[in-house]
Image (cartoon, rainbow, N blue to C red; front, side, top):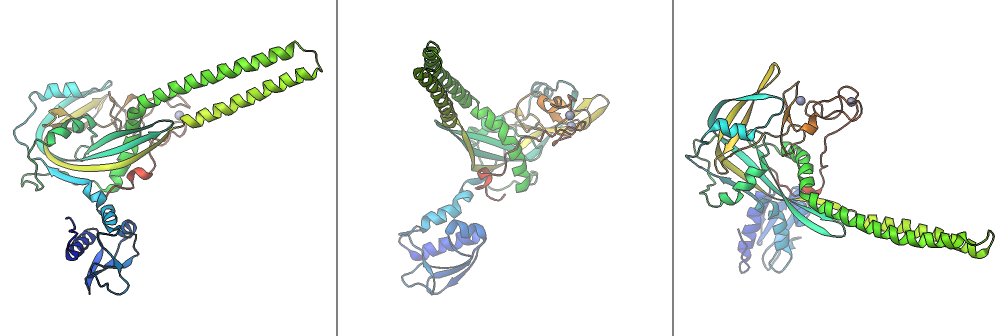
Length: 397
Ligand SMILES: [Zn+2]
Ligand SMILES: [Zn+2]
């Protein structure tokens, strides 16, 4: 759908189709115009009011704004088209690939330090992934951009970042289609609130991992600069005190040296503050694109056993990556391994999510008790990004 510069009629058609697709009510008016009742997002992207008239010809309808190639309207339409253009969907009807030795695949991928498990069955199934890319920028005395990929398996709830990163380049070599095969039975797409809820919890750990080396380098340089600052001012300060010490009490020269020492100390503190400001890091994160990927997998049903309790979970084996996806940490959504199993609900969590309470020392599961320790009530809410700019550009699901 590209507007053609030479034909005002084509521009009008393009605008009409785009506006309808974006949920606006559109009525053609004479001559060569559109009357638009725009929802808030459309108003915002186009910079128009709720009710707007657009004109495309040489003669404008009454009270209409002129829309043409020479104006900034293409930018405005691009803004409106933006998120949709960065959202794609592919169906990958793969056949024939199955895990060779499911028992071994499972032993290799699932590491539980305090529970046993057993493979119940492996069945062919379909899943739907939402693969989302984000740009994270860290700005201090230096600026760095990082790409973060978070993928959700909407059948199992797994966040198989590694598997989805591995299949990224492979997808382009596979036949994909936009049409779902008859035998496909993917899980329903999650609603936006549920996706954003998972992302808000999943992004902090991934951000830490991505920014780790950058922050370490920053700290090293900050430490070096602080040392240098200290050394320089300390030498001056000591010299001034030494000079003061050899002069008699009440000598104006002695008072001057003491004042000089105090001024050096003040300057040192101010320089330290400057340094802290210079190295302060601001991190922003912004959604870039989403791929919805629908494909067949092999679904492992796994029984987890801890003491006298048991629970069945599902893990998907991805035929393109030829890998089993690890289970999500139900408390932190982080990708690190291994997993421990909690006593009460048999949640699979990272060891830190079963750690002792920092107040009373009692160990508890952060998936069972997300906000506070069940024994003493000390609040330890899970880390989550607030809904800042990162989700702003994400289209509706
Ligand atoms: Zn406690
Ligand atoms: Zn639990």
